[in-house]
Image 1 (tube, rainbow, N blue to C red):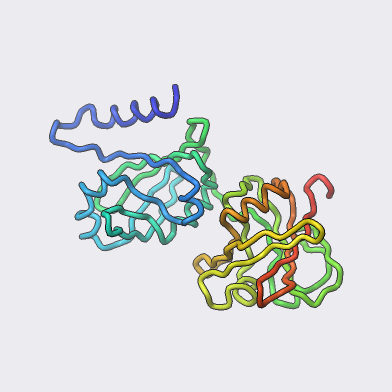
Image 2 (cartoon, rainbow, N blue to C red; image 1 turned 135 degrees about the vertical axis):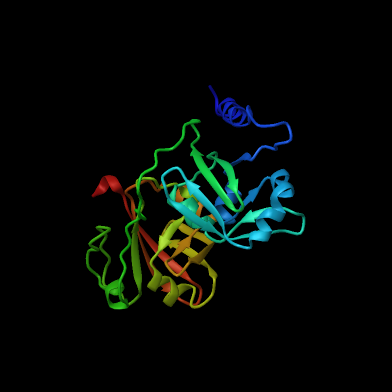
Length: 268
């Protein structure tokens, strides 16, 4: 049975015993490229029209209760054309569950601003939920540690002695190019964003080429992230796969140019 047919069964069974005046509280949303890049998710307009007053009157975050037992509090806004958007907290939600293009989120509106959410992958199966932590290893610490030309404890990358700041990041087992790459908090705030919400960076590989502009954005004062179409292009053209380690050295702070050295997973 395909995903569409399964959804029909799920939705039909949930309304079978409801009175004729009852309106469905379930809806689903397919994950698209824009959902992952623009850091927002649009709720279907028909649902928004019916329940916007109820959600607005609550004047609180929208609460997503996921099948793994976790609860997420997401900020929202209603655009001029009446669409309800999930925004603040959505990027972290998408990262935590490693959402990819083609995934499907099934929402059940329980009450007020509370929704139960089930997540299905591209094979039409519900994902396996398990406790997760950010699994992309990063060489973090004080500036002196970032500048030390020694092997990183996390990433197994070495760099020739340099006065330039650098960090390294290992592609996690679930790595997908459209989700971008994390940047350590201290490195991002001191050398890249410098108080701004985001900046455009350029990735440079000697004798290979440049990729940019690539936005680097801060997320909730936890970490930065390189993302967007040009990051995906860089990742795809350099064939990044899980286990690869990228060492990024800042060679121009004014232009935000980062020299990249890649250590392949199968070369360690």
